Amino acid sequence: MQAVVALVGRPNVGKSTLFNRLTRSRDALVADIPGLTRDRKYGLGRIGSGNYLVIDTGGLGEEVDAIDLLMSGQSRQAMREATHVLFLMDGRAGVTAGDEHLAQELRTLGKPVTLVINKSDIANRDLALAEAARLGLGAPVFISAQQGSGVEALIDDIVPAN
Ligand code: GDP
Ligand code: MG
Image (cartoon, rainbow, N blue to C red; front, side, top):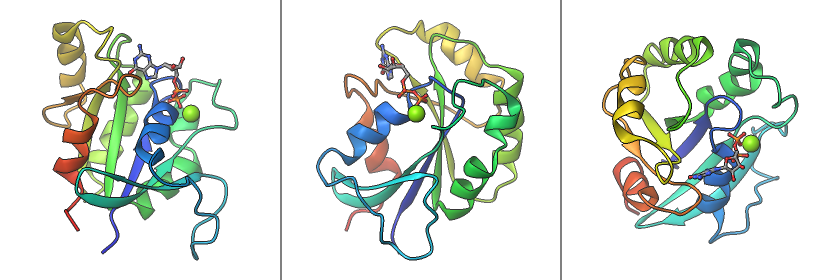
C-alpha cells in the first residue's frame, strides 16, 4: 500500500518547508493521481528506504491562525487520505488552543500520528517537550525541516521500506 503522509499543524510551524524537503528528490507533482482533490499540495518523495506521497495543508488563508483553519476541510480531508499523520508544532512557540483541538481530533482518528517538534535548531528542547506533553500524542520527534536534521530518521520510522 502506498504510504500517504499528511502534514498538519497551524500556520508557520514549517509544514511547507518539510514538504519541500520531503519531495526534493522527486518532481513534486502529482496532479494526476485519481481521487485526489486539488486544493492541497501533493508530492512524491523518497528519503531513506521508502517511497511516500506527502500532503501539505494550508496555503489559502494561512495567515489566519485559528481553530477554523486547523479544522478546515483541507486538514480534515488530508487526515482522511493519509496512512500516517505528522502533526507539526513549532519548537519555539507554545501550544495553542487550536493545537489542542486538533490533537484531540487526531487522538480519535484511528491512524498513526506522530507529533513532530520542528525548528529544533532554534528551540529550547525542555520547554518544547513540556509544551508537547499537553497534546497527549506521545513522545515527540525533534526535527529541523530547514536544516534537515532528524528528517530521515522520522521517515524511516513511519514509512515502510520498499
Ligand atoms: P507553514 O506555514 O507551516 O507551511 O510553515 P513554513 O514552511 O512556511 O515555514 C514558516 C517559517 O518557518 C519560514 O520562515 C521557514 O523558513 C521557517 N522554518 C521552517 N522550518 C524551520 C526550521 O526547522 N528551523 C527554523 N529555524 N526555521 C524554520
Ligand atoms: Mg505552508
